Length: 280
Image 1 (cartoon, rainbow, N blue to C red):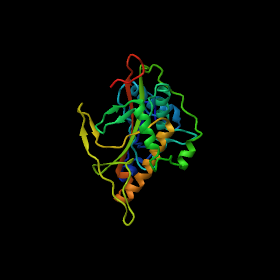
Image 2 (image 1 turned 90 degrees about the vertical axis):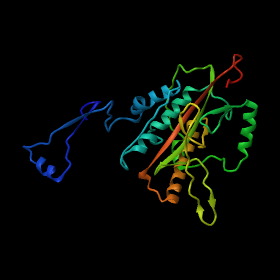
Image 3 (image 1 turned 180 degrees about the horizontal axis):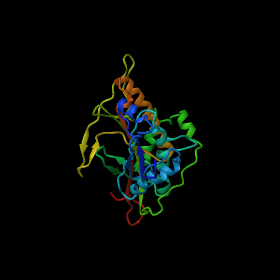
Image 4 (image 1 turned 45 degrees about the vertical axis):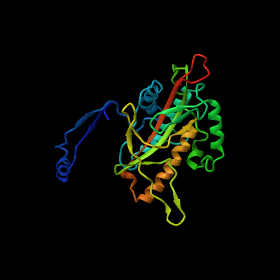
């Protein structure tokens, strides 16, 4: 690494080249590669987030889509970069912290926004939302997941990053989904897998891609879960990771041949002139 945009390599592809370049009098040619930004091995998680993650969240709250893609061989550090640890958080929890810091005070009541399964959302009254919430709380299996990974994050230090000039004339909600792409099939990692007491877990059913009314591609009928905090979102992430392992066992799949996508959607609707009701 020469600077924050240039990496220097000495190509060495074959045994012949190795033997030829071993001679100190015949050093290998150096090749320079230019990138938008290069980070060294001593780069802190915070600095990486400030340079890579924070601009994406700043765009998100202004209505722009963003993509953060990690790619590399096994054990190259992708998971640590994205999730980190309780003491040294990665990009994902910092991104979520920044989202919730920015919409503090303007979050809608849970279940006011409802996914319509067509890549959009419906709005219901707060009375209906409260009734829906009461119904959901009495359903079995709705307790919070207790996991060592979650426990490690319980006492973590929140990232203070925030978008200050967010539109306050509306209300917001955050939804997450978690899918896996394997052999051109798409699986919903938040969908409950049917279980047969005799044969065990059944293979997950693949989802399909469709176009919405704006001709935007989306995964049809995927589970979208509303979250009110970074901790809730991480709960969902860990649930999905556990189901991913189960799905790999059922499908006899190799994790290195699959790609997972954790999607964060920020939904916003303006308030009417009275400031009491959301406008569709």
